[in-house]
Amino acid sequence: MPPSSGRPSLRALAAPSSLKGVLSALDAAAALAEGFRDAGVECHELPVADGGEGTLEALSAAGLVTRSHEVDVRDAFGGPRLAEWVELDGKVAVCEAAQAIPLDPRRRDVRAASSRGVGELIRAACSSGAQALVVTLGGTANMDVGAGLLEVLDTLPVPTRVACDVQTKLADAPRLYGPQKGASPDDVRELTAQFAHHAFGHLAGSGAAGGLGAALASLGAELVPGGPLVLELLRFDPRGYDVVVTGEGTVDETTFEGKAPAAVADACERAGVRCVVFGGRVLAGGAVALTGIPGRAREDLVTLGSRLARDLARR
Image 1 (tube, rainbow, N blue to C red):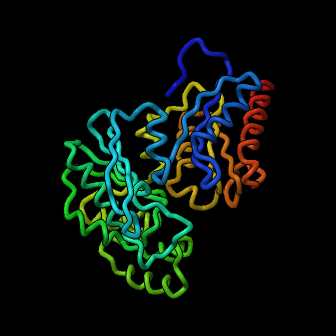
Image 2: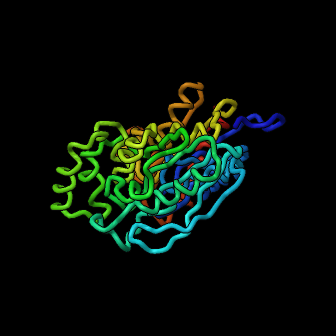
Image 3: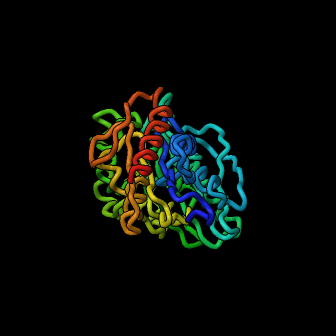
């Protein structure tokens, strides 16, 4: 989304992902933009996502959603939940798995959590007459390799791409993500053994969203890195900006495995545009570290925008 003509000579693009549990991508983009504008630099806001929670919000904020739908589904533990899916250009249906079975820190139980609600959400979207389907994975409570989803779906009637927020293979998912979903050490060992010989477990992204990647691949879907796919849907274009700022709550090795900030940085490098990556915590890479204090996240981003604006003015 290049800026329109007639704008000031210095232009910035705020394209952050969410700082999970602290700031949404929209709020993070607004804070960065405030800092730039206070220092006299125009800033366009384009919050991004990589397939986890917030993906539909980013598409809506970019003005790309032509219609949204709400569906009654079951959450990860069988309770009623209202989940949303959206249409882009009236042709592409987008379902976000976290809309149906989000990871809730108040209840984490990998033995009980089911992906059935995601199947119900996809089934509703597929019945709409859409010509293509995008399913975004990440931020879910399940670790059932899509067993619940496969109780509902036995086919995908339209071409389907799956945006995986990580490129983890299935057998590695229990060790890397099981504990945050409530898995005990015994659970991790048992799940790893169960997942080891899955027919689609060798695929990058098969371990995304508790194995939903593997389940959807078994139905013929194409697994792709989430960050680049969501940027494609957002029509991301950094050309014409002096600097692009992106980041997320924690920058670590997974940031560079399909997450949105890495995809933004890669796109900027190809376009020859300066990109600054930030993290509330920085555990890998050369990102700018914020204070890491959740209550100061918004203030930190305003300050970062102001500092980068002053840096631009001196160039």
